[in-house]
Length: 118
Image 1 (cartoon, rainbow, N blue to C red):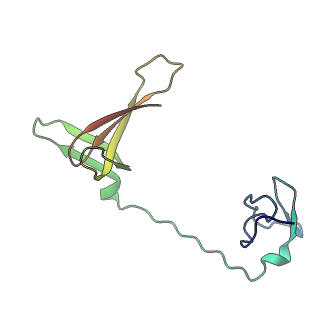
Image 2 (cartoon, rainbow, N blue to C red):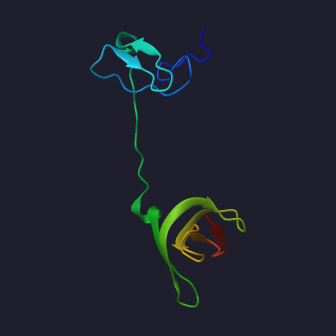
Image 3 (tube, rainbow, N blue to C red):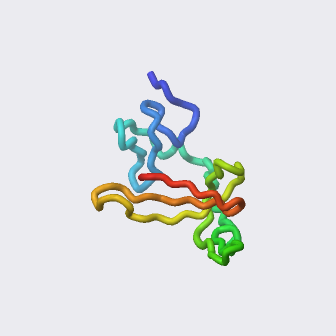
């Protein structure tokens, strides 16, 4: 008895995403080997869309009062000080080479800087 169901894109036995139908007459779940006939997918419509951010929102170059520039890609991260969305980041290897790098985030609105060790 299946515990998952309702969406034919997922395996009804284990819930794993099913691969797209190919040349064989069946679609086989890569996790539990459940098989479903390709005919089950007939007349099913699949839609997808890709949304690109405008160029002016994806990168930023700002100058502050001491004439230093803030350059880099704007990411979807909320500033912990002003609570606004949009931060620029850069990375540095601050610790030994066998440890993760340090990521520095700078808010594009208030210029608050955060540090995260990865």
